[in-house]
Every structure is written in C-alpha cells, then in structure tokens.
Length: 106
Length: 276
Image 1 (tube, one colour):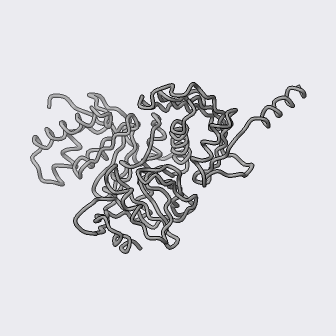
Image 2 (image 1 turned 90 degrees about the vertical axis):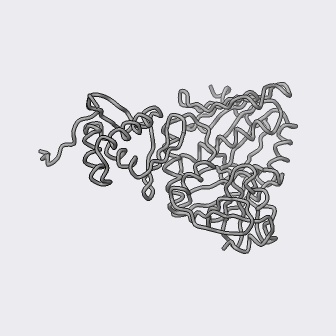
Image 3 (image 1 turned 180 degrees about the vertical axis):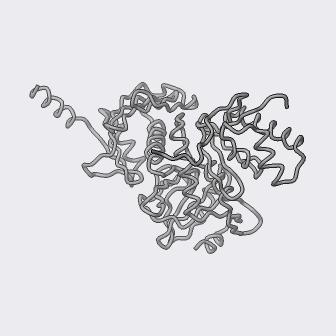
C-alpha cells in the first residue's frame, strides 16, 4: 500500500457486541450487518487516528499469526466494503485527534 | 374571546368520537360521519373504551370512497415537530407534544389501521417497546410470543392453542417494557385467523422463533442470532436515524432479558405441551 489509510466508525450507525460478533445497524436505511471476529477487531480499533496498517500489524498479525501483506490486503478489502455501506469512514488523513493519555486536568 | 371559546367547545362536544385503546394507550378519533365511527366500533370491538382520558386525538377528514392507492409506498417522516405519514390511500400527521393529529382517508378501516400501527410503533420506540410480526397468547399468566415471517406458522400455532390459552394476536404482537420486565398486550391486528386478540396483557415468558419441521423441538438461540431474528420481525417505518438507533439498542436489551428459542414444530396441539 503506497499511502496510509485511516478508518473511523460512522456516527450514523448503532452497534453492539454480542458474543464474538458485532451487530451494526445502519441508521441510514436500517440495514443490519454482522461482523465476524476479525472484522470486529478492526471495527473496534477504527478510531480515525491509527493507520490501518498499524491496526493490522498490532491487532491482527500478532493475534492470528498471519502474514502482514496478506492480512493488510484483506483488511483493506473489508474496510472498503464497509465504507460503501456507510459503516466506516476512510481517509488518507487522520479523521480524529489522538486519545490523550495520562493527561492531568487542572 | 369568551364567545369564540364557547363556540369551539360546543363544536367539539357536538362532534362524534370513539376511543380505541391498544397497549394501554387510548386514541380518540373524531369524525362527523357516524357510519364511519360505527364501522370502527365494530372492527375494534374489545378495544373501544369509554374512559375520558385520551393519549392521542385524531380528527378524521373523509375523502371519496375508493380514492387513493393502498399499495403505494408508505412514507413516515419527521417534519417541523410533526410526524407525517403518507400512503396512496391516506395522509396523516400528528404532533407528539400536543398529542393531536389529523387523518385524511376514504371511509375504509384499513387506512386508519395502518395509521394506528405506525403511531404505536413510534410511541413504543420511545419507551423501548415494539410492534412485532408475531403471534402471542397468554397461558398460566405468562405470555408466549411466536415470531416469524409469513408462512412461518404464526396463525397455525395460534390456532393450535389450548382452550385455556388467551389469544393476544395471530399477526402483530404488542411488546412493551414494563418496569424490569417485558409484557405482551392483545391487539386487534389480525392475520389469517381473522380473529382479534383479547385486550389483556401478561409478562413475556419467552420469544419463540418459528420454523415448521418434522418434529417438535425447542433450542435456545444465542444473543447475536436472537437479535438478528428479532430485528427482522420488528415493524418500523420511520426514516429517522435516532429512532433506528433506539430500536436497535432496545432490541438488543430485549433479547438480553427475555429467553429466545428456536421452535420447530409439527402442526398439532402437542407443541403447546412443550411451552412452560
């Protein structure tokens, strides 16, 4: 992949994890989607800030012992499919601010 | 001003009305046409109440008989603080704050039936309840709900119910959250059985996903499958993202609290012996 891809969960959907599956309903047309275990991991990690290749490397390759190139190819196909349905947002730029960790509120 | 108010009150008193209470929500319908109100009284017999309270009130304006196409697309939209409901054979709108609305339709029972269903889906959606493609009946103080698409066996299982069971509906079940449990209410919405339900309610003991098969068999269903099946049977019409999200989460809560089973059955009354 020549450029970084950022993924974020759409705000127009409702989602709930039931067992290993994630159920997602599109608020646009009430279509119901079910994500399997791997797709659920990608969905949960889609914070708009971390690039997809890092998510795949940290969450998929280590967990499932798959080769990075193959896993990334599958992940791109998956997120593009979900984006077509309005479930995920894709961008070549970050879609959100990073989570602030260890911040001290004054 | 005082004279004007008095005239309005007298006009209101002179107007004929009928109150139809489904799921504990009384909906008062005003019409100048006594024949139309008489038809509603017969159709919704058992659900007509004489109480003075009304949860909603509708003024009916009758169009020429036979006008409009009941097969046209239904649209339910939110516009300027009102729900607008339109199909070829009727147009309705109502304000959920003032709890008043109006319906324009020809003098037939089917158009207002559709308005009632939609009104109740919207009211229930706000409170975590549903109208469901499901038959339901009460036995031993517990409600059993049988969900399925056309042909799955809703009417069959309703017609096989033993004499000590009370039919709530063979087509559209009314499910409402009632404190820490869910209750099923009777509805006048009939399927092939052509028999309205009794206007009573009971806590739901279980939701059964119907499937006709070679033997009677009950198997628990996992949460994801139960949610998918449940959502596939929820009646919902509004094109509104917030309500869609609300119905989705309510459905997940329902299957989290109510046992859901897949019920395979042969069409004879022994299936009811398996339900406890």
